[in-house]
Image 1 (cartoon, rainbow, N blue to C red):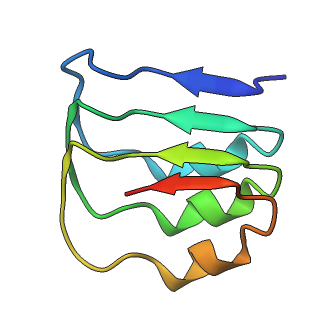
Image 2 (cartoon, rainbow, N blue to C red; image 1 turned 90 degrees about the horizontal axis):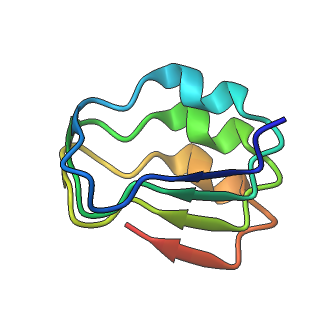
Image 3 (cartoon, rainbow, N blue to C red; image 1 turned 45 degrees about the horizontal axis):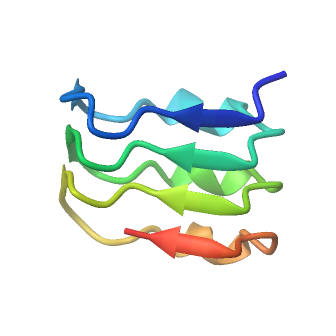
Length: 79
């Protein structure tokens, strides 16, 4: 069971796949400082235990998904 996904400042690129929402027990997700692009996956809202989300320092486009409002456990959010 994955509880943390920390891949900051690794020069990763591409888009974040919608399957990231399958990580239901995820507490921390940090992919800041990479080269991700495209839309922020609305499926992140399925990670209902998420407390820390940092996707800053990338080239995401489009709107912030309204579904992220449902992340009731969130303590720190950096977009």
